Image 1 (cartoon, one colour):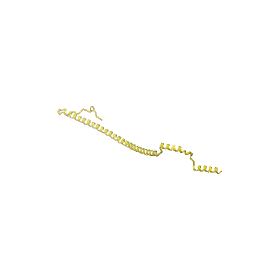
Image 2: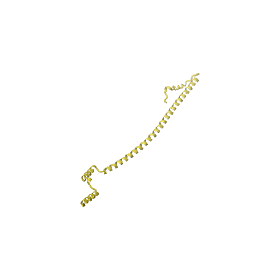
Image 3: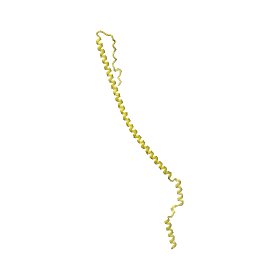
Image 4: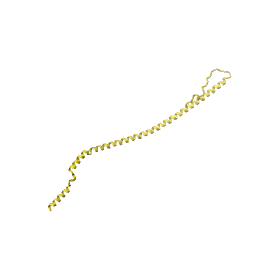
Length: 149
């Protein structure tokens, strides 16, 4: 806490060195009381300065403790965020791998033009009218039976 100069008593008067008879003891007593006052004033000022320094030390200690706790908190958050980022990177890599696999499979799949060519051949051959071997044998057997009759 700063000490205001107006609150401090005036500095002690300097001894002038002129001795006056009869007033010498009075002057010595007033000089001693002035010195005592000065010592008391200096002592009070010293206590105020010490209290100010003590308060500053406490303030800096609290500030340092707060900074340390915030640093620990932020370090923990950074570790959490870093682990989250690493997990996201792994997931993105897995998605890339799966996407590449899908692309490879799509490259091996038939294209639209290939399917259209197959459709034309199927329509040309008309496999619905195809006959199975059993059906052919059955038809032949029926025809032979008719001729025998």
